[in-house]
Image (cartoon, rainbow, N blue to C red; front, side, top):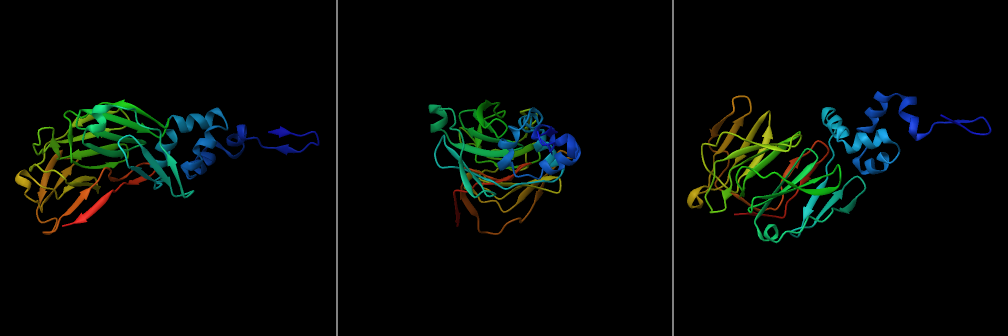
Length: 267
């Protein structure tokens, strides 16, 4: 509390949480658009720690607060983000240059407060909104691409795809953004690539795709996180397939959803 020469009292930003109550202030803070988090973090050390540590995003996830942003890449190393709250595009820091990475096939997914970009060269780069920077991340057990993926909370799930020799895979893995570690899951019943992934009702679904000899699949598979096993679901799609040239995925984070689509073609 600040007192002016005329005896008037003013609440300063540094002790605002003490005046209104820490719990009430944080309850308001988690509902504030993350567009303003950079400014709020500059007000005092407590606010800065709340944002930079990622605690504010864990509280948002706990309270069911989501915000929808778009992250788009039009070249190998450059990304932009669209903030719909302020209707503006934001330049994301340029990825570290690497010739092998630039020339390799790529995949991407978002989970927690991170954006992961994979290359078939066994390289993974991780962007975090906490520091607005890129770092090298631990790769999956084996380099692969054209997989189906989805995320929920701080975990991401990937399945299917193809390895560097072109072999279609039934492999599946889980990524924990809190520990930055990969865990191998049970393999699917059928190998598939160019498939889609979605998480619903506590289960991971992999849909469509093609298998060996480019045979189109109309079945899907369901991974039960409790039983740790896969179940085939027949006739999940019709004869038409959705062929997507995508560099990005549609996914939800604790703070936002990334809807990252380049081209979609019905065949």
